Length: 346
Image (cartoon, rainbow, N blue to C red; front, side, top):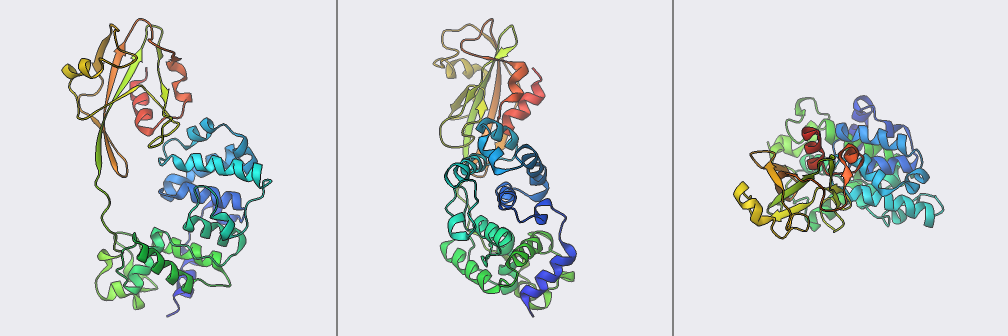
């Protein structure tokens, strides 16, 4: 059985109609790959279209303000991708005279670009024989060849990269890479793959040994950390409020939020005054407050669960510089904050 030929033939009849498949412009390929990191196609597609419309060239992206980029990215998560995207656009325009690097060796030097993304851009935009290995490829190869080496180990990464490099069609690397990724996304799915009508079924080790659900093997993730966030939604009589920018490294860097107090556990209404006694906004201030939701809003990130409370605090005048609540939607904020803003309606 010719693995590559079968996968490419399947792709020719089953590929989805996606805009980045009609271009070899490295800017558009790069943009699509960054958006689709950690994001499914159905979620990423509207963002791709919005970015192309707002920034039709890498020069447009480079000259934009980071706040505009983050606002457009809002809801996609993993915001470092957006910051790296903007940084790299400025680097290419200012340091490389606006010319996108045209080979894997140079592309992988770009901020926010790893082996998979560099391989995808190099092969699709420039025809370089560089094999891609993403989650879909890991799944297809591990099942077909019956490989149980954990995919999130150094050994596994090297083993699967070497195998993909052996299999790639040197005459049509872009087509092969797109075919195997699409095959994993649509045919050899994580759950309930279409094995009965799969063209690779006759040679698939996992199918023959009934190990479909066991492959690929992935070592357990790090323990999830629980954090307890208390947002202070301070509102004065003129409908002004206070927001701050998260400038420290970590989740949501450079996004905006209401003033935050993080506690070691979920606090009650009776504990609220004590928890805020030293807060720079509420210290020595008379105010009325109430808890917006009875139960904590739990926002799940990859390695963190945020148990969140929104405290509505009414004051006559703000204890600091504020903004009109009418303009709050102009600022890039985490989804957690955005959903609250939509519900609260100020």
